[in-house]
Length: 237
Image (cartoon, rainbow, N blue to C red; front, side, top):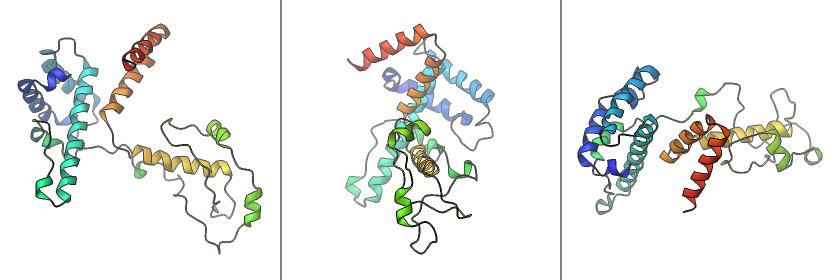
């Protein structure tokens, strides 16, 4: 892939053609979620890539596009941060020679998820209960059974990269006055931590890992083991 990025002529043609296929990058385009249209557009781009890398496939192309978008977003953020600093001499200068060519990607980052897209029945963020709020005493709270970290992991599964979940110390009241169980409070905590994780910046490494995982899931067991071995061998070099 470095070969392509260092080929100025190729990158100029590739980026210009990518810009002419808005269904691949313009999130409000009517065909942005049309898989048939997007597949046809990717096939057009792939023909350009194959002129330099004959063995390239759709997976390779998606990684290339994801890398361009991710790098542009990071560089753009650095420029904006340096401009806010107010020091003209400290304005960040992007390292990519094709940075200006990618300005059509500005404001085209699709949110990973949002609260508005989740079911309306999900709980509200945890908040501390008022001292004047009716409910069980502190002694009753202390006597209530709590989930250990180990049992919580068995009851509520979540992404491995999320921080260890701690059961909130405060017990909130439902509108009906019934006290939430420890498991309910743990689920609420997990939900909000997962929301924060979904809002984290999306990187090309995330895209690549997802693509590799998807391909390995469709492999035979022997192929999976061989692929894992090759990946581990490459990582340990």
